[in-house]
Figure (cartoon, rainbow, N blue to C red):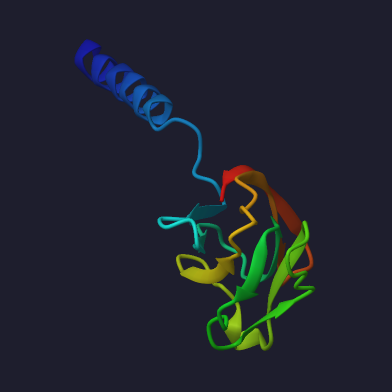
Amino acid sequence: MKISRRIFLSCIVCLAVLSGASGSPAQEVTVVGETPNNIRLTWTVTNNGGKSISYLEVPIYGVVSHEPPPEGWAVNNFDSLKKGTWIVESKDPPADLRSGRSLSFSCIIGKEGTPLRRGTVVVGFRDGTRTQVGDVLL
């Protein structure tokens, strides 16, 4: 009986250690941006959660133009050379960014402008809920 109790307690300790070692849960949505040549800003949105993404609100300024978004997506509220919000939204339900998928968008930054390096991206889900991905490096 002592052996089975020891095995049982060992299993509980092992599970506790493993669950603690995993750290905080992964973010539901991650946004990573980069400007390798300070002219083109490319940012990638990855959906790690279970809900489909239907739109994104990205704070950005210093942009003179944007490249066409991927098929099924549209850029609205585009404000050239002004600080504002760049809204990228799906045109059709099939364009949803489903769980486990990534999507990249690019824009061109003017010589006088610089992208907002840190900010909050608002992510809108198909079910009507919203979440913020704060302090992302764009």
